[in-house]
Image (cartoon, rainbow, N blue to C red; front, side):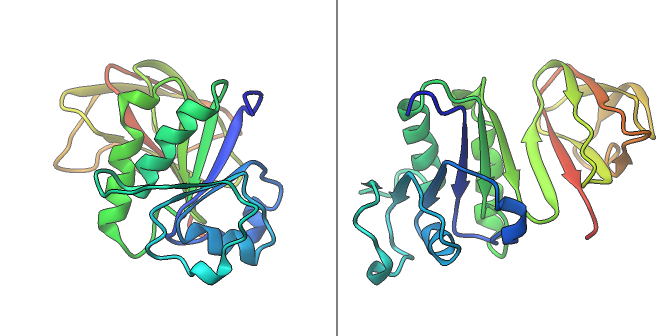
Length: 210
C-alpha cells in the first residue's frame, strides 16, 4: 500500500452525488460512511471508527477494520492518524461526508485539517458545492477548476496579510479580517490559475451555486 499517493475518505455527513466520485479510487470508510460506499458498490481498502452509528448487519468481514476504542479523538482524526502511518508516500487526501447538518462536526473537521501533523499532504474537504483546504505560507498556486465559479480566502490566524493576482478582484497586502469577510466570492478569469501570497495559512474555498 505504500505506493498509494491519493486517498478518498467517506465520513458520515452529507454524501456526494455519485457522479462526482465515480472515478475515484482507494476509499477509506469511517463509521456510517461505509453505508454510502456499500450502497454504491464501492469496496473500501480500510474501514475505521467506533461504529456507533453503523448498522452492524451491513458489515462485510472481508474488509480490514480498525476500531476506535475510546472517545479521546473524533472518528475523522482517528482515521487520519491511521492513514499517515499506513500510507507513507501519500500526497493527497479528499474527505467527503465532512459537511451537512451537524455544524459541530463540520467545524471540528475544519480544525482537524489545520493540524500541523498533516503538513505536507494536500487535504481537502469536498462536498457537492465546495472544496475547502488550507493554503501554505508564502506563494500558492490556486488551480483553475472549471466546475467552480468562486474562490474565497478566509483567515484562520490573526494578522494574516495576502496578495491576490490573476483573479477578478486582485489585492496587494490586504489584511484579512476575522470579524467581517473581506476576501470572499472572488472569481477566476480567463481560465487562469490564481496566485495567492500569504504570511499565514488561510482557508481556500472553491464554491459554486449549483
